[in-house]
Length: 210
Image (tube, rainbow, N blue to C red; front, side):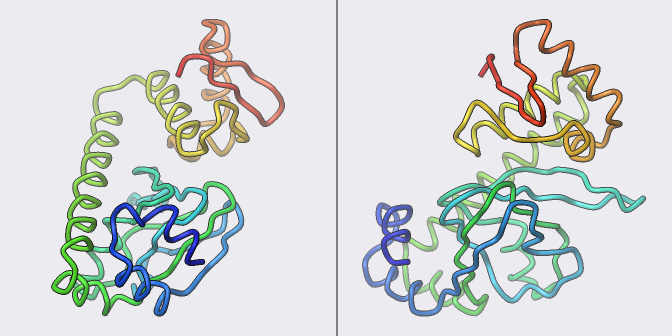
């Protein structure tokens, strides 16, 4: 575990903090599509992503999921941090995008390390900034982009967090993530393929226009 920590966080954290993280962190391996944290769940841990990626959802008034953003290796989740500060229940659903390994840190260490380590403070503040920027981009996408543009952005984002221009995903999952129907998504995917922006295969999409 210490090697994974050093690989993703040594450039951010000093050795003493890395040792503390290793001492208190709980390693959790999550298969693809596993729910890591659910809406209404009491937040007792914050995640540091060692490998893989996580997609973060908010639930609408009808109980349908709305994709907000992805978090990947070396990241943490600002929405979880916000809940920690207010000692609240989770307002988001976190699902493993691919097989993912996270280090779960007990929430009481968050404020302790904020005062003890400048590097941790900088990391948390930067994480807030990055996640809030992504959240605003998600809102802008919903408000201002046509569905075909949102779809292409979604595919590009998935390719980036998976570090692979070929992603494994069904049309139904895309439809759920984008709050649309499978029929509409299939039609738009075919249009994107005709425009030479993607290449479609069975449960697999290659993004040609990254």
